[in-house]
Length: 522
Figure (cartoon, one colour):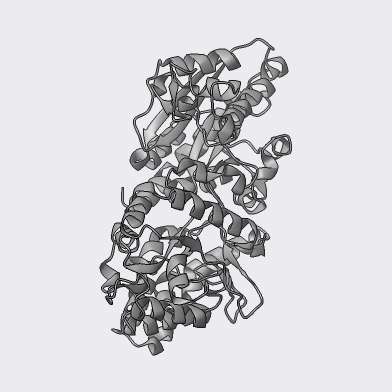
């Protein structure tokens, strides 16, 4: 569904939603005190709705029966394809039959819905329960801030690694040329040119180059929050601004322009997809790319090692910025969130069951304990031989219909720290395991910047953000490629501001002020 249709839908259902919230609240407030508290052995009916990218489990699977028996509940989880979720959720919320547990994504139209529905009173404030959650302190403070609407927490976040994609480099090439991992932009330029001109792979051919760049200016070679697209800097009026229009970002574009002119950046980068850039790096053509702890690819690394058996890749730590800061931005830090219906306010027993549903999914089980000897792991995965089997000391799903975790609205365990996730255990290529461990060590040893706009809403950004970003990435791509002079930077910024960018800045800064936010280092 196009973006504007989402806004028209939200507008047209507004009155229906307010009516529905009233009905749900009436439904809850009609309970007596004893019925709200529930009887100890009462079986509570709990409805939930969430999105999925895959085939959902069967509605009558053994995993669901196991979940119902364990918690003494009657649980009904409605899974909706992610591409259809916002439209479906809007209709459900307007119907008056609001589910007890509702999932939202961290970005996009459903995130806007969370904000709007919370403001309209659809959800139960969760502040009084947060301190009792055993995983509460595992969740970064800026993520909890993103759960707030008008100062109250209405959602419990779903795990996603807090550390963003950051640059990495071929250490074996550095060693071959007698160079070190760069610590500033001058050293980076020196290394990138050496990778282009000095035969780092030792094959006697000039067939390598410095760094891989693709369409949309990805990867982001900012080497720190100071030069990134984060809302870090302020304009003359004291407003936070997006990094892509800052004078500091201009320095990165100038650097990439110089390297491109010297053949040290991917030719025709503006046409390169993510898959294309992966192929460039992992086929051994270039020496600098990006990676992270989570979501890397064994086949990619296997391809590189097959071509260059001696390949060693390591992270590039952040550069020290002119203001003294030295750290990368945080990733948004949560995949989504789960809200509870306001109709359940006061129903202590039922609320406890819903919190337990979340706890079951959020418990992080260490890799070495993911076997039949761990009772919770065995149960969540449907008992060895029924829901899963052990293969090469790792659990392999047999039938997700037999797994209670398949029915949970949130089944992503939240580790105590991102490093505690030990993501390297999900890989098998030794070189990739080593790289992911090094990423983990680097990120654990540095500070990260929390963007003050995280979790806040700008309706203009939701409506025009993609087009506005395109103005900036198109212009900066042309500057890097030499099709547009860098002296046109102010012209680019003026176009961005005049076509809605200033409204985006105004809306976010109003929300920042309203929510008493600021950019912080953690």
